[in-house]
Image (cartoon, rainbow, N blue to C red; front, side, top):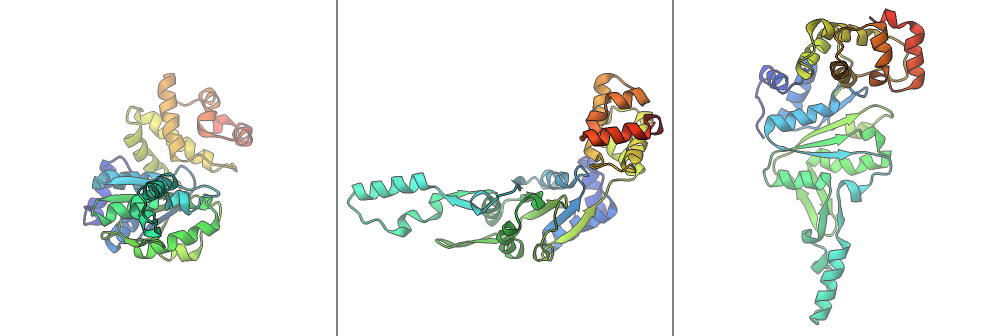
Length: 290
C-alpha cells in the first residue's frame, strides 16, 4: 500500500483530501503506517476520528472495511460465521450420492461467511490495499476486545476448523473510541495512540475552508469563534467539528451571511443535541456567542 514516505508529504496529502490534521496526528499516522502498527484514536464525538480512515483509504486507493462496534457485538458478526444453509445442502447432496459425510467436507473456507475482520485479512493476504476501521470500540463489550488481540499483534485470524489465515501485507488499521469507557491496556499496547482534541480557532477556520468553501471569510471566522465560546460552556455534549460544518451548510441553506442572536437561536438544533444544553446556551446569553 503506497503512502507518502515523509511526514511533510503525508501532511500535505491529508490536506489535499480535505482533512486538516494537527502535526502530532500526522506523526502518529506516519509511525503507524511505517511500523505496521494499528492506530488507536480517542477523542470527543465529531472531532474527525472516523474521517482519518476514510482519507487513508482514498489516499492509498484501497478499500475501506468498517466494523461499527455496538453492545453485544460478537465473533460471528465481526470475524466470521458458517453458512449453515449451504452446509446442510452439501450434506444432503453427499447423502443423496451415497457418500459418507465427513467434517472436512463442510468445514472449509468455501462455507465461511466473512465478516469485516476476516474480509480485511483476506484482502491483505492477497496483497490488496486495505484500510480496516474498527469504529467506536468503546461501544462494544469488554469481552470483545479479546477477539482483537491476535489480529492486532500478528494480523492473522485463527479458525479452529481450518487453521490460521494471515495477512501477507498488514492492513492499515484505525481504531476509534469516544472514551465512554476505558479500553484495556492489552489493546492499547499493540497500537500507536493519539488523542484528538477540539481544534483551536485557526485550525477550525482551515477546516471550514476545506469542508464549506462557499462560506464567506467573515462568517467562517464568526462560526469558529462562536464554537470556541460554546465549548467553553458547561455542556453535556459540546459540539464537534462535524457540527461546525453542518452549521455552515445550514446557514447557506437559510441564506444567512452573518451570525446574530436570532440566527443562533433558530439554528441551535443543528449544533446542540440535548434540550438541557440548549437551555444552558440560552441562559448564558446568545449575544455573548456572537
